[in-house]
Length: 55
Image 1: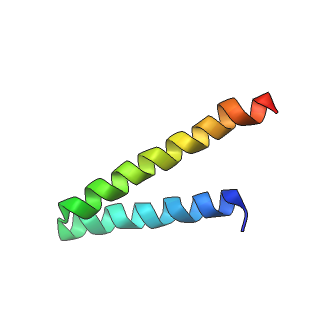
Image 2: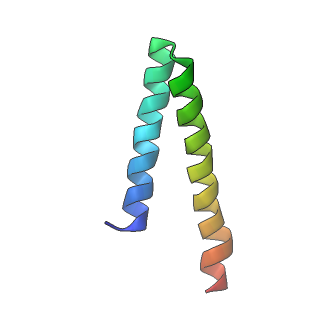
């Protein structure tokens, strides 16, 4: 699978994790999902604005 599909699947899974964490009031799931989502979004922005233009 390509990198973009994997990143898209991870974003979808983490978004579902955030929704489930809010509904079930599970603080640990909510924090882990939010932190991983921020890391993945920052990696995508790093790819778009730094790595791809430098190629």
